[in-house]
Amino acid sequence: MSIGISMCRAGRTRTAEELLGDADTAAYEAKARGRERWIVFDDQLQAAAQRRLDVESGLRMAIANSDIEAFFQPIVSVRDGRTIGAEALVRWRTADGVLGPGQFLDVAEDAGLMPDVGKIMIDATIAAAEHFATIGCPINMSLNVSDPELKVPGFCDALIARVLEAGLEPSSFLIEITESAVLAIDPALPVLRQLRGAGFRIGLDDFGTGFSSLAHLRELPIDVVKVDRSFVADLPTDPVTHAVTASLVSLCGALALDVVMEGIETPDQAAAVLEIGGTVAQGYLYHRPMPIDDLESVLMAER
Ligand code: C2E
Ligand code: MG
Ligand code: MG
Image 1 (cartoon, rainbow, N blue to C red):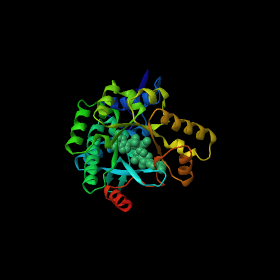
Image 2: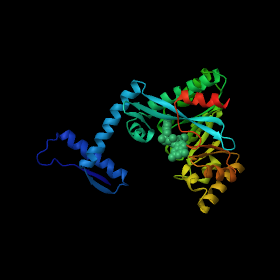
Image 3: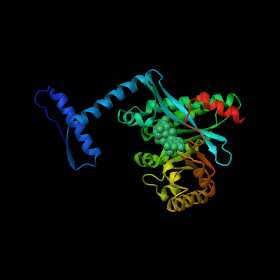
Image 4: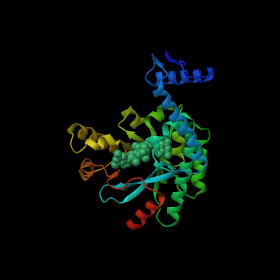
């Protein structure tokens, strides 16, 4: 059982509704901390709740005002650093600068705004792919899709229609999902199979965090495994990480799965990736996520 407690302290005024709301927030916190406990609503929870409210209302405005946009991070060949694709990553443009998903995606999820954010990202990514095809630099695009989006009825049909309308090949899109999303969607398999049946490629993101079930590698309808950057970080220095990652890369090869190594930051890491047979990567060593105009400059320069 999870219990949330709120009190009206001396000198403060709270309506009954506010008090119940506070207790509700505290009960949620009790659940988030693993249930079987009670939490008293305090100033810290108050501040966190206020932050969420502020982020949520700001986000709603940003969605309406087109302040949510896609940045793109090149995915490269480790051998020569050349761009072979790009991953679309959501950004929120504010007066104080550009915010990353870590600063608002949790709130978007709780507030049920992921489908709206996802729609913006799909539109932006298809538009970008269309643009690069038109200027003679066709490029494969990766899209992150969360479980609330996959659960929207008709999600697959709409995505397939959008890509075909734009005259693009579904096979030039990688749909990135996480294992936790796969487990959260019931039923996930038909959705993934429908996307794959239409020609999309499916990628398992952040592999190595969370469950990292080898059974998933074998059983899920996937084409690509994105190995989490925590593996890459210690690859050159830690023999155990090296052994595990090398085995993972060779296992993926045996299962005919493509591998993308995430988060390459140093030449040592790139060398270690090559040494264990990794050929495709993304990371700050090559490029940071960037606006579409900068991606165009990268592609033009490489041409
Ligand atoms: P992800 O899909 O695993 O994306 C890779 C993240 O790693 C990006 O963070 C990227 O900027 C970061 N990264 C890339 N190279 C390096 C590196 O060399 N070092 C380090 N330290 N980090 C690197 P970002 O953009 O903050 O995105 C974080 C996560 O938010 C993504 O992880 C993805 O799970 C989620 N996300 C981003 N955009 C979307 C979206 O449009 N829809 C959904 N559903 N999720 C998204
Ligand atoms: Mg991703
Ligand atoms: Mg990832």
